[in-house]
Length: 181
Image (tube, rainbow, N blue to C red; front, side):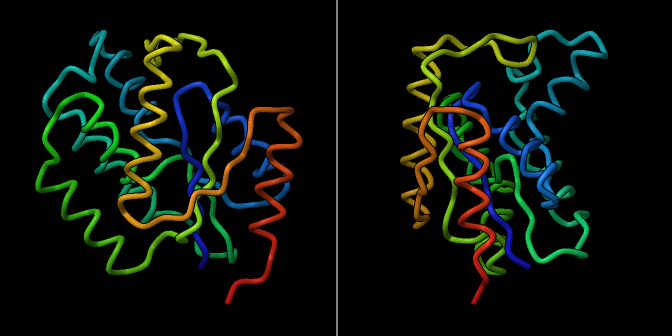
């Protein structure tokens, strides 16, 4: 099973790219942080990312989704990974918890994700949503932290520049459609 990750700053178009890849027939796994935020907000909590347990909740959901993903196909594409959660902890100024450290050790030891990661570049703006309350300038700082984090963990970043959604999805598909080793 080859598992690829889409990463980048909030609002860069990762989820839209992921949905295009699903239309191409790839098995995809949605982002966890947005789901954690949406669930908490539906229960009346306005800013769940300020809670101490937020990082671990995101990491737990990522693990559940990775372990629960179908193994019917030969390729899966993930909207973010625990390495993104590591970058999020750094961005929020939080320590990396023992649970997140253990998950990163597990996925590294098991070689869960391909070493090539698709870095979806900023579109030049960042539209706020109820779950995404970050300015464009803050999103660029977060983008840099993601890039540094993935490189520090030894990943090769494949740049997917800003552009037409179909072109971005096609660029990702061209790489993942190649036969694996």
